[in-house]
Amino acid sequence: MAGKILTRLRVTRRGRSILMLPAWVLLASQIAQSAPSAQAACERVSGSWSFGDHAEKDKDLSGAACAPDGRCLLVSDEDRKAWWFRIDRRDASAPRLVADKPFDLPKQGGDEADAEAAAFDRGWFYAIGSHGTSRRGNEFQKSRYAVYRIAWRDGRLGEWEASRSLSEVLSKIPGIAENFCLGKSDASCKSLQDGGVNIEGLAVRDGTMYIGFRAPAPGGRAFVVQVNARDVFDGGADTITPNPPQQINLGKDRGEWGERDLGIRDMAAVSDGLLILAGPSLPEGDHESSGRVFHWKGQGEAATELCHMQIEKPGAKPEVLLKLGESESEYRLLIIHDGVAGGAPVEYRVRK
Image 1 (tube, rainbow, N blue to C red):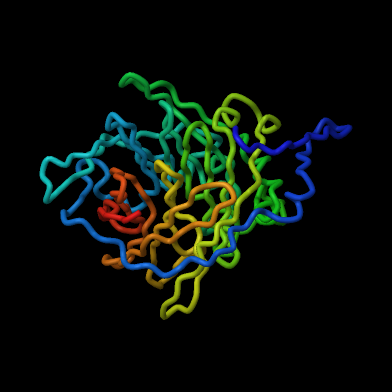
Image 2 (image 1 turned 30 degrees about the vertical axis):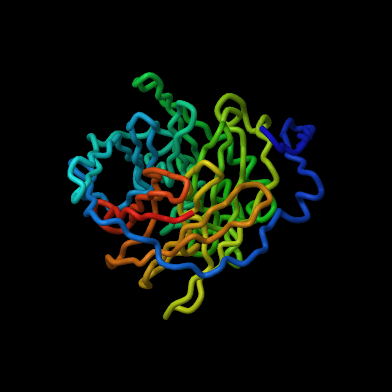
C-alpha cells in the first residue's frame, strides 16, 4: 500500500503481540485543520424513489454498494440482515430499488452483526460492523467486531469470508484507543451516547480500505483509518499496517438544539478521492437530523464541503450514500435514510 508507515510488533514473555506505533503517530494524528465552509443545499433530482419487494418496510437500512454490472448489496444495522438488489429506472418518474429476499451475514459469535456500511472494489463486496457496544445497553458483543467480503466475478457470487482482525489494530490507535471496547470489563467501554467508538463509513478503492468513524469525533474532527483490504482477510492483526490515522474536520451543525459535532455516516469512492456523508456524531434524540456531503482527496488533505441536505421526512436520518453516476462536472447520489420505512431514498445532483 502506498504511503505505509513502518510499524513494529513486540512479543512479550507471555507471547502477546503489542503494536508499537512510531512516536510521531503516538503524539498526534494528522488533522486537516481547514474549517468547512457553508455551502448551498444539495440539488434534488425529480423522481420518487422507493424500495420494491423485500426491503420496503425496513427502518434500519445502513449501507449499500453496487458492482459495475448492476449487482448491489444492502445491509442493515439490526440482526445480520442483508439483501441483494438492483436499480430499476425504466420509469424515470418512479425509479425503484428492487430487493431480493433478505439473507443473513455469516455468524460471528452472535446474532447481532450491526453492519453499518458496504463497499465494492476489484471484484469484492464488503461490509463492516460498528466495532462498538450496543447503543441501549452498552453491551460488548464480539459479533459487532467483524468485516465481511464476498467475491463477485463474471456474474457469480463466491462464499462469504469474515474477519475480526481489525479490533486489535484499531484499539491501539491514539484517539480511538481511549474509546475502544474490547470486553465487558474494559474501562473504555462507552456507548455511542458517551462518544464510544462507532464505525459507519466504509469505502474500498484500489485495494485500500478506508474506515470512517461516526464517533469519536471531538470538535467535528472525524477519524479515517486506511488499511490494506487483503491484509484484513488473508493475514492476522500482526500483518495489518495502518496508514497514519487522519482526522478530517467536518465541523458542526447548528439549530434549535445548539451545536453538534459532525461524524462520518457513510463514504463512497469516486474518481479523485472519496465522498463523505456527514451527520451528527452522537445520537440525535428527539432533534432533527442533518446531512452534508464532503469531498476528500485523501491522505494529508482537508475535506471540502459540497452541499447540505434538507430533511423532509420526520425521523429520517441520512445514513447511506450510494453513487449512481459521475461526470466531469457532477456526482449523482442516492441518499437512503435510517429511521423511516424503506429508507425514503432521495436522488441528488452534486456539483464538483
